[in-house]
Image (cartoon, rainbow, N blue to C red):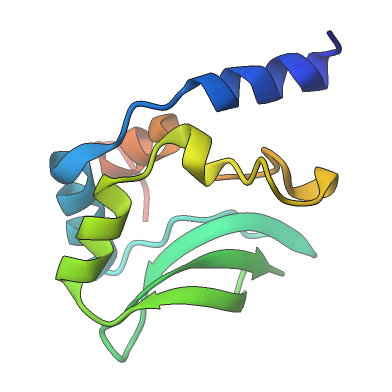
Length: 121
C-alpha cells in the first residue's frame, strides 16, 4: 500500500458517528461566529460556517471565502441531526474524484479541535 492508500484506508475505517453532543457543540461555535475551514488560495477543502441568514453551510471552499454549492441547513435542528449521523469516513469524500478524496476534509479530530477551548477564531 502507498502512503495515500494507507491514509484513505484509515479514513474509511473511522465509521464511528459523531453523535449529538459533538454536533451541538459545533453548532454552538458556528453560531458564535467561528468558521471551520482553511483560508488560502484555490481549493481549500471542506468548510462549515453560519451565515447572516442564520443558515448553517457545509461545502467546498475556494480562496478561503467562497463556498461552491454548499449544503444549506435552514435550522439548527436539521444541521445537528445531519452532523450527528456523520463520521470521519462519511465526510472523507471517498466516492469523489481522486483529488478530493481525503483532501482537506472535516474529520472528528478537526471538529474536536474546533470545539475545544483553545480553538482560535
